[in-house]
Image (cartoon, rainbow over all chains, first blue to last red; front, side, top):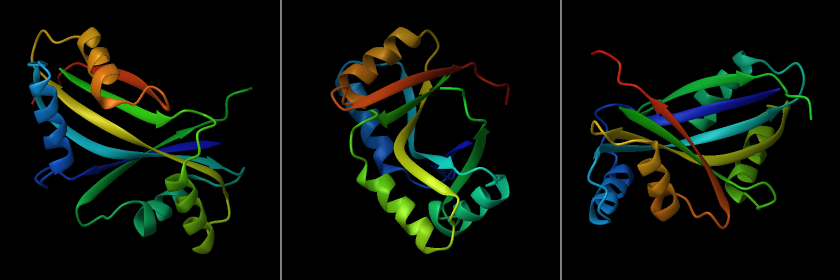
Length: 81
Length: 81
């Protein structure tokens, strides 16, 4: 089982990293970019029996700073190799 | 139009950040985690007419270091506000 967690700064929280990327893209001639937000993606390789509730607990306790960040969880069943 | 770009370290490239997260989760009592990879997610708010080809060029030139990182692009049509 795999889980993918997205952690993004909440709307309204200044994102200097995204702002720097937007500026750099503009300087490189990419004009069609109105805004950029940068976040983290964390891919967890889970043992069998570890469910979404546990991943949620990981997010609350460690992976996201819920004061300024929001997170979303995508569970993916294991693909056959 | 929005685009979401995932940038992950390629398989085989050491990911100390993910390793640190895995270790911390273990220390906090989350035993069901076999592995963690951490990457970046970049959300681009694009002007109309900016397509996937242009986002790909942004990735190649700025957003990802293609020597050690792989990227994937998800285009999302604008939702009505």
